[in-house]
Amino acid sequence: MQMTTKLNVLAAAVGLALSIGAQAAPISSDGFPNDGGGIGAGNLVLAMFDGGSSRSLVFNTGLTAASFNAQSTASFNVSVQNTDLTKLNNFIGTVGDLSKFGWNIVAIDNRIVGGQFWDSYGFQSTAAVGTSITTANGPNSADPGITGALSSANVYFSAQSSKLASSNVAVTDPDVGLLSFKNAWGNNLGGSTKIDNLGRLGASLSYFFFHGVGEDPGFGQVASDKYTGKWKLDFTANTTKLSYTVPVSTIPVPPAALLMGSAIAGLIVTRRRKAS
Image (cartoon, rainbow, N blue to C red; front, side, top):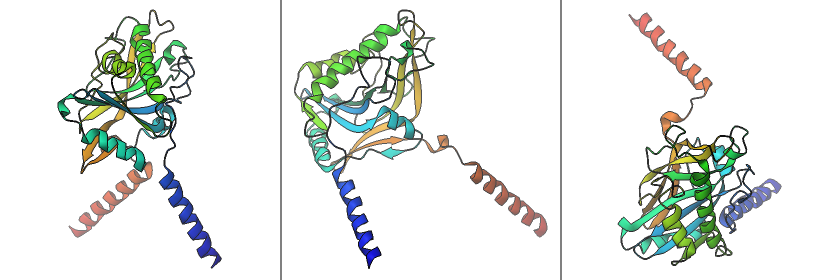
């Protein structure tokens, strides 16, 4: 009887935890403008832009850059609580012209790379499949390429954070935040290097960590480290789904599974030899 009671209490607690979901909070941008924090505290933010109606939406996923990095080698769906899901559904469901609709995911993530201070200028962002910026073909300076994009993203995040007091979703009309998203970094990297980081509904986008390279941003260049998975935004059956998918071929096979496979193959060969 006591065990049954404990199990019921545990089940109720689990149900309560699942129903609460992520708590609303302003967008964290990893200590910006204090570059070099390198703690990965920046939130992953889903941003949508409806050009036909001049509206913008941000959804604070609640995932930090550090927590995403820890699970970036496996596929998962972003958990969305019901109140936020309703707002996402309403926004996408009322888009009149999907050809003018775009989305991306960005996180200001000032991780320290290679122990160099200037290398910690960085952010994560979706980009079109095939996108890559390396020291071989990047701009001559990391300063406008990285800090310009960081500054523009921060302006946009700051404009939306004040609207996230009671929800993880904020919808805005044209304002400084929307203009920053659309003109400054919505489809380019800080105005210095064109990067198509906007996706259409149902499209998959690669994900990168863009960062400076070199001891001095005046002489450094921009590089990009690509994640194995891709982000995708779907709206099927009038329900929004945000997912991160890693191809099966990139998932490492445990050594024990390889040994078991070799043993099974050996048994099959042995049986065939005996049968012949």
